[in-house]
Image 1: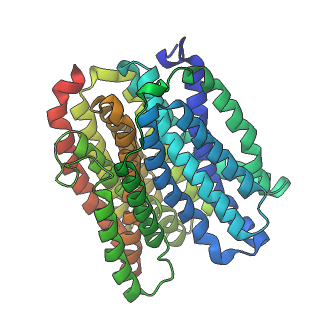
Image 2: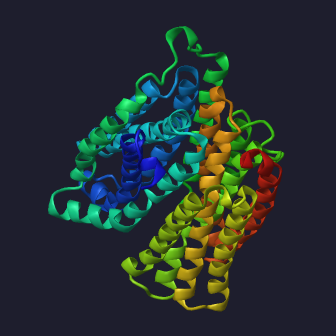
Length: 447
């Protein structure tokens, strides 16, 4: 039996995994049902807002809940984040107008972002360090099933019942997952005398997160905007993000200081490579090769499956593979996968080659990300775990959003070749950052 499923971790592992699974399902299912939602609510003009509001709220949730978990402990912050996620499901599921639906999506993002950070803090308290890599591998696998059945299941529910039940039907499942975690939450918060009060810096961090969120919304809403305007908006938004992010990530992140700071930067660059390529891959297979949507989607499923398989392999190998090696190999596999997609565009390779390339990229992410998560916890003092895990998650979100914005502009200039060339260049940067992350950490993590 897997160690994380043995007593006393059984219920906590199942509940935490289920929470990640349900958040992943919602994230992937909404994309499928949005045409039905906007048609029913006459809200096609707010289509993009329904997605960008969730991402923006997630950044704020990560910072606010992460800071709170550091000051108080993970129990109450996790329950509050879960309640916000459920409230978002209820508001979106009962929405009669598009603004109300977007408000529900905002609450979902706020809750999901905070829940992610609080779960990481809980992991640090409940599980011994030797099991962290196994649990993070399990979290990664929680995205696989939704990637395979989420869109299909959401479509069936929408056709058979209504899109409302894609949200309302998940409420009871979230409640069940939370009930499994409750025993592990008892006694995890600090005693009242030991709780840290909110500081002015906490307030400033939330304000900075709001600036980042607003900039992310701008970067995520450039579709259809005049190119000249976009060329002004992108640098301004990126500059605002860079300024606001300085206090939301560990000191030395911009200088790629070895260790924890470079690991956070690696999240941003690796996420930019992966998601900046993923968005255009189905479009490439549809436009250039004439593949139907369901078939081009299988390529993305291949990447998700490879991600989970690689995470499972890393969890089983544990410390038998040096962390430095895992991080570098993961970065190389990710960049190699993106390079295959660029070669497919330039040379006109068979679409099966593109699928193989994306399988390689997914394996790279599955090799890389669990090690980064483990590293962040290993290099964090107890009072900093929430801040540092929030920084990692924010880097994920902001790196992907910024990459997508730049790739969108390049796509308008050079369809497919532009964004894929950018992804490969960013992949080369990712490999260099991976070297900065891993080399000095090997003796620390190995001990």
